[in-house]
Image 1 (cartoon, rainbow, N blue to C red):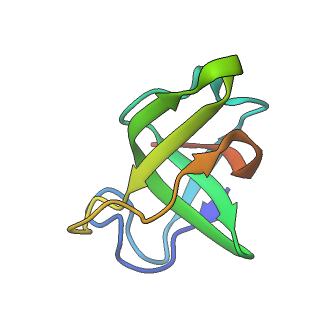
Image 2: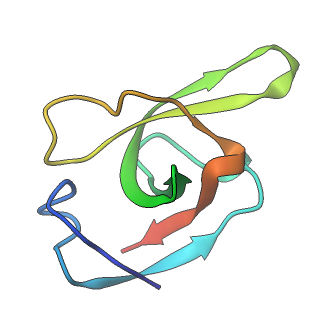
Amino acid sequence: YIKAQGNSMVPTLKNGECYAVELIDNGLDISIGDIIVYCIDQLVVCHRVINIIHMNGGRLFFRTKGDNCAKADGWAVTTEMIVGRVII
């Protein structure tokens, strides 16, 4: 489980509420529209996948955005950063 902190995913995820997280070993099961949990610079982030970038060699990158944010996150999420997917 993860406790949502902040308002970037309102109204889907509400500040202070707990949500189940399905652990993910690799990014192959992630789809556009999924809400993923990932770590960046010691922060845990829950944001929605808005694009999946397939690179040569099979490497995947994910573009994410908070539902309540005007712009996408300024970085690409790698499979190594991903902890899991939020189950609503």
